[in-house]
Image (tube, rainbow, N blue to C red; front, side, top):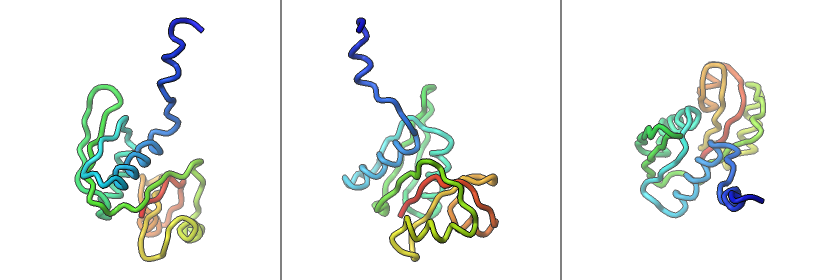
Length: 141
C-alpha cells in the first residue's frame, strides 16, 4: 500500500455505462425528479433514449459534450415504471421475441424490449417489421 491506497477505494469501476444510466434514470423517476443528469454518455445510451422518447416515456434530452465522457440531461415525464438492462446481451431470434416479452414485461399491452440489430438499435415492434433478430439490450415499461 503506497500513498494512493485510498484513492482506489473511492472510484467504482463502471462495468456497464448503459446499466448505470438506466439505474440512474429509474431512481430519479422513483424519487419524482423532473430531470436527471447522466454521465458518462455513450452512443448506445443515446440510441436507447431515442427509442424511449419515440414511445413517449421521456421528454426531451440534451447531450452535453464536455470533452470527457459527455453528459445527457433528460426531462422526465413520470411515465417510466421500470427500465433495466439485460446482461449478458443474449441473442434473440425473431421467433423468440414473444417469449422474452412475456418474461420481462408486465403485460402484452405495454412495455418495450430494446434490441441491438445489424440495422441499428430498435424496439421489438420495429425489429418485427424489419423481420430481424439481434441481441437484447434491455427493456422499459
